Amino acid sequence: MDITQLEDNFGIPGRLAFEDHNGLIRMQVHLDSAAAIIYLHGAHVTHWQPAGQAPVIFLSDKSEFAAGKPIRGGVPICFPWFGPRSDGHAGPSHGFARIQDWELAFAALIPGETDQLLLTFTLAPTDLSRSLGFDHFRAVYEVIVGAELTLRLTVANMGETPLRIEEALHSYFAVGDVQRTQIIGLESAAYIDKTDGMRQKIAPAGPLTLTGETDRVFPSNTAAVTIHDEANGRVIGVEKTGSATTVVWNPWSDGAARIGDLPDDAWPGFLCVEAANTAADAITLAQGETHTMQAVVTVSAA
Image (spheres, rainbow, N blue to C red):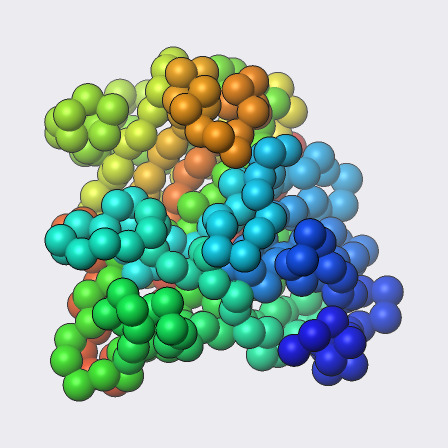
């Protein structure tokens, strides 16, 4: 659909509008409870700001907004694999979902006392996905914008053979200073340190504070996590279901210098805490089976 058709079918005066940004269609959401921006490209949430709060989602000033390119920041959907493809075949990093246009299938205000907007996006096989061997899946992504942000990804296997997938909601959370930020909920948890030769380690018994480049994968971990953003005087909560992996990532100064679409000095301003199913926690769907992964993000005063 073009912008006119989207406005006619889904626009809500004063609440939901569509516009072109650098050739990509995005949605502007304005509610009493929160504001948000979501692109059809990748069904990518790039902005969420509850009323009275600073923005909760980080977006790189150097992000490329172009067809076939990932957006740096926001909440990229990693699917159907996480990181480099590991089955011996070629494919883009983090899969194809974040570089494809999703279709908006539904948009409506949720009745009730809370001021919330539900958006539903769908992704079916495309020429790109088929070229990568994925031609029998369906994906549905529900985004509920309000004082809380709910992100719900459901994948179905429409084929006759089992479908193995990895997935992640690669959330970039905006913080005042990552060096003054604590993560609570992963105490004494086992993790794989991707910055140290994939060594298996145990997290500290107390809150996690990052002191350098961090890329930690916590397998078999379903715990809720809170991000204590001291510089902004707030706590960001991430509660998840259907996710057995948690990923914590920040590139630090050296890593940021290697990322072309991230300013060298941007790393102190974000922290990635990701709901995921990767590696040993990957999901295998039988014919006709579905799986849903959800993350609910909240913000409160410290």
